[in-house]
Length: 355
Image (cartoon, rainbow, N blue to C red; front, top):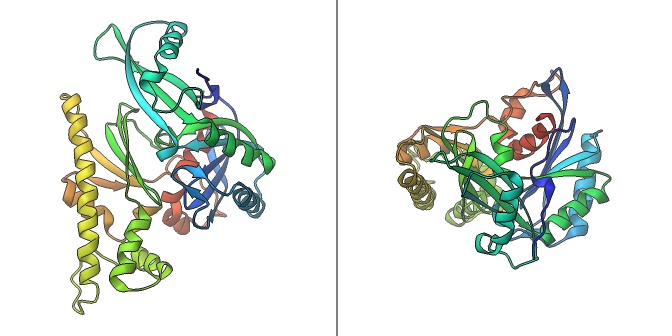
């Protein structure tokens, strides 16, 4: 009826490659540790053709394997140990509260109630758990329970093995992302991906709410494409370099585009606000202090100040490079530009140095 995967929450290893297989691209980051300091060694990205991955399911295993192999060859990675991630629709995560008990007792308690917590069919998923913190009462503990379907886990591990890597851990995206932070303040993190955005609320470093909003960078691009009547790739370029949600356009050329984008993002901010309000209702004494944005969809010009105005909170473009030492051989200007796309893979690679 149940099966546990120990690799979700792994203990220390050394130099590793973080492999982030997303809907729109594969991203890899390799670091090495120098006197307990993580140093960037390699990184690379390859876009995926449409329908390679759909609804969290890998549709074309062979193509994905070939693309990952090409990416490893062009970046010239040397480590063979890989840490992978699951997130979005491919992952279930839930915070649970239990009475204080030993880890062995907790494992038995979770085991017998799995079907009550996890929405997958029995015997179709891997799961793991971790004690995150004390509960609101002295007699309670908070536990993070995570699960992912057998099919997804087996497929991604098979792919990395096929290109000569050794998968040593599977992480969940919110924990990988948080590993790139330099502090553990109460904050919300919004990872704007290709097809959806993953919203995580962290309390003292622990993910207490993880929610998917079905809006990502692709939908923003489609709005521009339809409003301007231009091909998708032109709309993508326009989104990243020219559309400014705040500026006055004397020519009026982009007025309709801006109107449609604002309508789309108004719905987006309503969902974010609902998540924040739900969290505040459950935790009256805790305040969300700021919101961080990351992911490839975060690169639209002036998206950050627009969201900040709509949400009435400081909104900050997260810098996942903050913990890394960057050798002089890297173009730091280019790195800062692409960094949001590599946030998850950087967090995965940082796991190699954890105690």
